[in-house]
Amino acid sequence: MMCRITRFIRSRGLHLTAIAITLTVFMVPSVFSSSSAADNAGSTYGPGVAELEVTDSHTDRPLSGEIWFPTRTPEIMNRADKSKVWQMALADKSGEPADGPFPLLIVSHGMYGNTFNQAWLGSELSRRGFVVAMVNHPGTSSFLRDPDQARELWERPIDISRLISHLVEDSGYKELIDTDRIYAAGHSLGGFTVMLLAGAEFDTGRYKSVCVGKDLPVACGVLAGWSVAETSADQREMEASRKDPRVLRVISLDLGGTPVLSRESLKALDIPVLVLGSGRADMLNQRVESRALANVLPTDKVRHLELEDAGHFDFMGLCKPDGYAILKEHEPGDEIVCVKGGKARERQHQRIVQEILDFLRT
Image: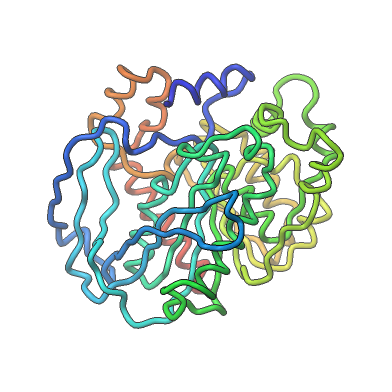
């Protein structure tokens, strides 16, 4: 699976971007182990998790994923040992939800990613009093890849709006959610997605002007590979505002796509934005991505932090000690996702969680 993604990226002169390895790779039988006292430190609740399916009229674009929620039993947390590469997030699949309401955070995965990529964040935040929901975006997820759906990139923010509507109107979790505290976060292409949700808009003119010549931003090759905004009809769809007024704060996790966003729309954003970038800059050029985004957003609305020594994949889950070697042997080139993916990434996760909590609780 990863080889196909790598070939897609490299065939267009790109580097590996916000892709994800599906957790079915290198599967072994499930074994559950009890959590340690250190795992439970600082948490008020347990991390409950359940499968999620959006039921609405958009039957041609099914959405499924997971919802994380606080449980009444913080002492119960298990880790499923399903991968030789990835360390699973702590979860209690049988946990009963604690008494709400709680703020809701929607998380959008990156290019060819999936909901497992930020499961660690769902686990961490549910233990601290948040409901966290995520779905696999059709066309641009590792499970649901389709050229036409990828071309319809405007559907990604719509996916999130559909998910919010489902959760607060039709789901069994609506009593858990405080509708006055709805937020969104996204990694890489997911960061681009939540910026559209915040009111940023795609700019066809900028896309055509910045995606010419050599040393192009990563987004140029990705959008061209998906035939995004090539027809007048698609340009209109891409340029339409996808702002969802229910989303009151957004978090960009090393986003990709800033160069093709309208500067006027960014300057007009009216909600707070946390922009977290990767100090190691191993995938994305911070000068044209997170730094550029932070520089154009209203100064009273943005907090920008470039995490020292963090890489693009540090916003994904933890790798097991042998993860790097396994990928290097079986999927050469993709071992980059596990560079500093153990204890060093765990320290980055601690800082990311704290920054998010500080931002959302302010």
